[in-house]
Length: 252
Image 1 (cartoon, rainbow, N blue to C red):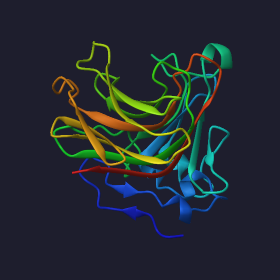
Image 2: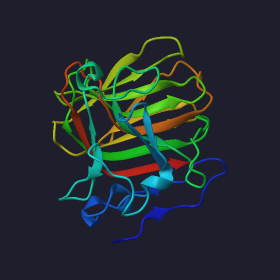
Image 3: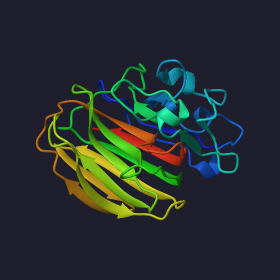
Image 4: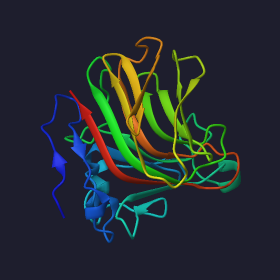
C-alpha cells in the first residue's frame, strides 16, 4: 500500500490530505485503513440518540465500521448507506433535522476537534464518488455541504437525484430558504469528481472540471466546515448508497 499524502498543518486549520486511491486499497480493512480519516468524524443514523464516531476511533485497518459505513470488498472504497424517511425506518436524526445521514464531518487532524475556518482564506474539498442509489427527495441525496459553524446551518448543500441531476442549494442568509442551481448531470452509478471551493468569500462548485460560481449573499457565515457523504432526503423508506474513492481537503 502506498503511504497516505499528508502536508504540514496550518494554524487552527486542517491540512491537505489525499486519500489512498481505491485501486491501491486493502478491501479487508475498515475505511480508516485505506483513507486518512484523521480529518473527519462520522455521523450515523443509529442509536437511541444521534451517534458521532470520533476521528481517533475511525483510524487504522481495525477502525470503526458497521453496516452503514464500510469498505467495498472489490475496490476498497468507502461505502456509506443512509436509511430513508425516519418515520418509516426508525433511523435516528440529528437535532434540527428530519432526515437521516451517514456523513463525514470535518475536524482538525491534530486534535480531533470540530473544524471551523474562515471563507476569506482558501478552502477546498475535492471528492471522487459514485452514487449507487439516490433517494426520492425533491432534489435527491445530499452528498456534500459547506456548513456555517456559527449559525449551525448549511450555507450550501449539493444534491444528487435519481435522474443523475446535481444541484446546489445556497442560503443567501441564515434565515432564508435555499436558492437552487443546477451544476451538472452524471448518470447514476457513474464515478465523478466534485469540488466545493469557498475561498476569498466566493463559492465555486466544480463537477468533472466544469465550474459554477454561486452567490452566497455576502459572508453571513464567518466560519465554516465541510461535510461529505450520504444525507438521505427521501420520502420513502428506501436507503441511499454512496461510494467514495478519494477525498482531498485543503486550506491555506
